[in-house]
Length: 619
Image (cartoon, rainbow, N blue to C red; front, side, top):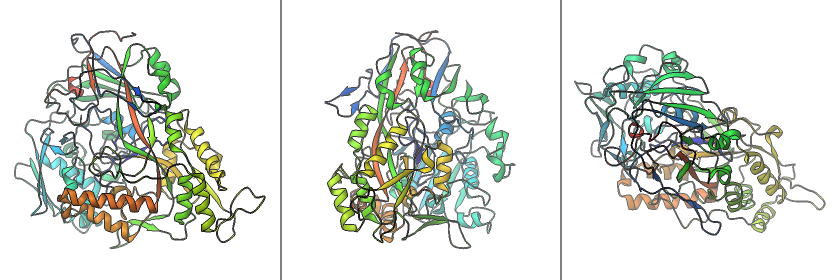
């Protein structure tokens, strides 16, 4: 399965990844962080290489000797300290634990290549008409939901209607969907259909009229919602009740290679193969997925309990890198860790005024000098090397290096420089009186900065404490919120709700497969958790999404300028770029995390997974 665009909530300093998917500018997602079973790649096994303490590199594909046995069940250990919620819906789910259990069963519409550009390898094809501002999605013949009903373009329309429903309480009604003609009228209840969406007579083609189309729409997830929901199965359920409905939580219906057979909420999912899967009947009889706490993940690997580990703790890499019976593949994640500054609040829609972020110039962290000083005070090169054995490295931008055409290599970011941090604070008037431990504000008042960070993994607390001590060295009184780390779900609930007790927080984003950052930093983006808004930033976002962006050289120039501007304004401190690794048992015939190779070619995908032995390898 190739990666799709998902802006994704990830655990920050913990080893476990979490994804909150979103449409285009709003997944997941991640990417979200998926298992990356995409396709193609090299034929050699993985070997990590540590070049003089630098970042480790890996092969992206492993193949093991042996003929495929008939059927068999592949066992997956999903390493997570947060249970999955069990919301089997692309439109409704809110965390990577749910993505990890959905991906084998729900199905996805479009395929993409090694550059994350949409191609014709998926369940539907897509055509973009720049002159008429339309996108046309056509579902291929012969694709069925797990109950045998055909997948149609009306199911794509229904997915849009869920998100645009007045009772929809999720986070995917972003600027991408608001770009559809007539959708705002549907959202407010002024219209009973979306005027800009037209079905063909046979209901296999959906034409979507946009106010404007941009080059980002050619990226997987880059502005077009390319997911379907079964209208025949869910359509009679009020949208407000969908999230808790048994049809979503207990008996989900997808069109992917495996069907859900049993769910133990928060703990495990059993899947059986779907004989009529459109790419071909899966080789495996089924999959068993089970959550594994980070504290026992290495022991589970030592005992060969699973065929595949996903979201394996990177902070424990040195303890499992050479365990017998497993090979390790790896790749750069489409993600980065960051420290965010709370700079405003989310304002709900009011009449004709859309929901949006509202910047507060009087926020505690509104002084850019304070933010820049805090960035210089932390040594993220050391954090990546010491806490993650080289599997993470200092981030320099909110655009990741994987987006090579848009990543500005000339932006240095904020290397460790305590002297510069102190200079900035001194000149900005944050005085440190003789004999005092902490600085005061330029107005002479006490300055206490409340820092929220997540639990999970062995290094979550040490990293949070390291940052606090680093800021203390430059005279800043930063205190861990309520004196403790917070569980993933409650942490993001409070961040999203703009809890006034939070001044700064440590999070992470999965970027998905479209570099356009409007869903994270745009004025109307719910995921813009810092609530940072400026006229200049809004203009950059509009330029990135404009029709002029089809001139990719011009668009790359806009990205480069924006990164310079963003890193100067610094609403967040990008802290770490990340590498993910996947231990694969040697009885798995082939496993691949290469981006973008076609599963209809030589690639490895869920339906082509196979085992070479009845027993799991121990050497």
